[in-house]
Amino acid sequence: MKKVIIFIVVLGLVAIGTSYLLKPAHKEVKPAKLLPADTLLMVELVNLEKSIDGFKSGKLGQKLKEIDLTGVMQNLEVPIKAIEEYEKTKSAVLSTLDSMLFKELFGQETVLAVLPPKIDHLTPEGLKKALGSLVLISRPKSSAELVEFVSRIFTKNLKFQTEVYAGYEIKSFELDSDITVHYSLADGLLVVTLDRQAIITCLDLRKNQQPSLDQNEYYQNLRSKLASSGTKTFVYNNTKKMYESILNISRLIIKEEKFSDMERSLAAFKGLKAIGYASYDDGSDLLQSKTLVMIDKKGLEPVYAKAYFTKPGKNKTLQIVPDNTLFYYWANNLHLKSLWDIYFENQYLNDEKKESMKTSLEKEIGVSFDEVFQAFGNQFGLILTDINTGGLFPIPKLTFFVETANQDTTAKLMDSVTQKSGMVLQKEEFNDIKINYIMLPFGNDVQPAYAFFNGFCIVSINHQLIKDIISTYKNGDNITTDRDFLAVNKGLTDKNNNIMFVKFDQLIDKIKELVIFGRNMIVLKDQGEAEKAAVVISGVINPALDGLKMYRTIGSRTFTKEDEIEADIYYKIDR
Image 1: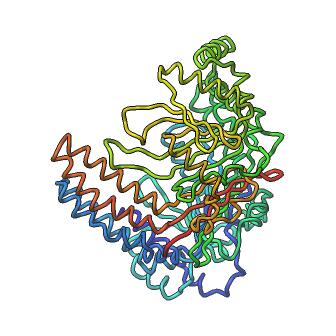
Image 2 (image 1 turned 30 degrees about the horizontal axis):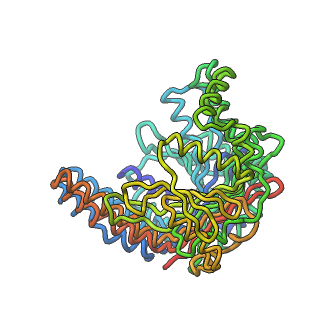
Image 3 (image 1 turned 30 degrees about the vertical axis):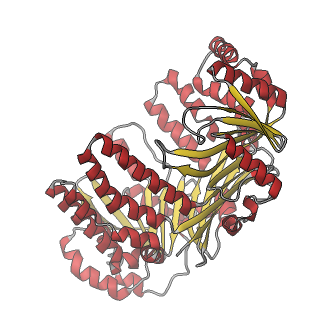
């Protein structure tokens, strides 16, 4: 940790050159202009100082601050040396984040990037070379007085080497006996690398006007669609190049005869061009993030094409979801034949073994696979309305649903599975809907049931939940009328490929109940361990969970476009 602190402090010497900062102001240069066009990954944090301060003052930050980890460790009789090491590390981290120097260097704009690694062989030297592909770029606030002060205090204990390249000064110092830090101030940006060639590559972009990341068509496309004045974080990933890099590295690790298996395991990434992500915070109680995946349809493996590019459709299940639902998920991209093909593709089985497995499974379920593939539609999902922790064991009030294309075949499949279990089906009618369920000696909460309703096969942990779903459809008190759902309904009721809704604060309360249930189970086995668990629960777990309740509701949607996939997430928060 001491070396990390020294590392951050030394970055403040970027003007060892107060002269740099006293020169006329540069026209603002974007960090992407100092990164090569084939950069694999770029993570940009805007106004990091404000984000850190906002986190500290927020409910989660305040609750984490309340945690006395030192006291917890003492109660658990953790060795004193480990406690002292923790306190030392904590003090170093907090003092660094609070320091004027950290805010000077990283408070405005910070970028971490990964360049294509150049690894010839997997040796310690080769791995060190890979580490050199990391590039840190920040835009200091340019306080000349601060830099001058830092220079005067700290430079006397550090040994620098300086070289001039393309009109820029590159300074180097040893962070460790095996690691050398190189940095330079280029057009108002501080560029830091662990490899001399990497910083040369960045500076060459300014010297020779070579193609930089901001000229990459993938980057331009994603940046134009995702970046805005309210952007808090922006992430760019050249998935195509990263896929190629992973394959190149794999060739160094995997034997040639096994390489095709590795290639097959990464087939899902083939055809993906780039991924962009951005998070936004406008100061309101609704946070947002957006992800875009650029796809080359022609480059996709046929077996994955249907899964990636199912047409967005109308959600037929919103009317059956109760308004007291804690967690709800729906999707319309269930393609059983494609999933079956993907499964076998990843099992590396020959045709004979595939056929043998298929025959065995068909015998087990009593229905041919062709019939199964034709029995179900594309929509499926689940509903969680509660978790009962008051009994002998936790019971989630959970319901699954899947669209039926051929109800007779689906019924035949359900009957076959039930008969093979040796259990007797009970039948009940509710609002003219036949509900099938199994009586078990665990009370009314555990009576596995299924019914066909509104074009879906609904399977639940008990038949009362199916009745609730039928009643919800009849009376109209469904999830779309719930105020928590309405708070994050930014397209959740439009045509989509999947949506998710979570009453996160209420789900956290249920998780807290599960934690207590777990502690009570420990009491039955070992009183001493239960006392330790109580210390951790009250001192660490509960405060952290209470802090997470600031995220009250979460809603997300994913949908395909012509040549990309978009995923939007909305968070209703309690600041």
